[in-house]
Length: 120
Image 1 (cartoon, rainbow, N blue to C red):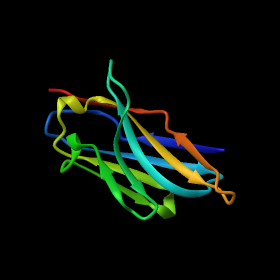
Image 2 (cartoon, rainbow, N blue to C red):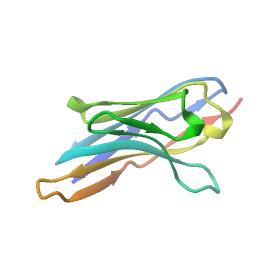
Image 3 (cartoon, helix red, strand yellow):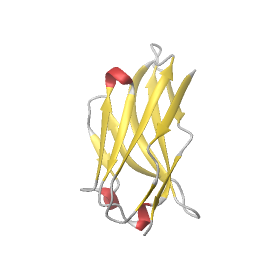
């Protein structure tokens, strides 16, 4: 069983920065991709950023140039550096890992969510 533990969510003023972390533990197969989703009240969950095993990255347009996703393979950890935060970035942020086992079967794992609030 794989468990993801997130940290780093907080209340921050507009223009501020936060760094989210998500560490995986347990029986981890080959990691295919990692990423971050967010869900604001009354809105659908959206993909914010993703990084593949080859370190290719992708971002939703609204965060390009402000957020940076990175990974530490040795620690099975993914990070999201968020700069120039805006009130519209307020949401619960969820990390996810996609793994593939030796049989080619993929599995998705989710963190419990961490609250990011951007407000003055």
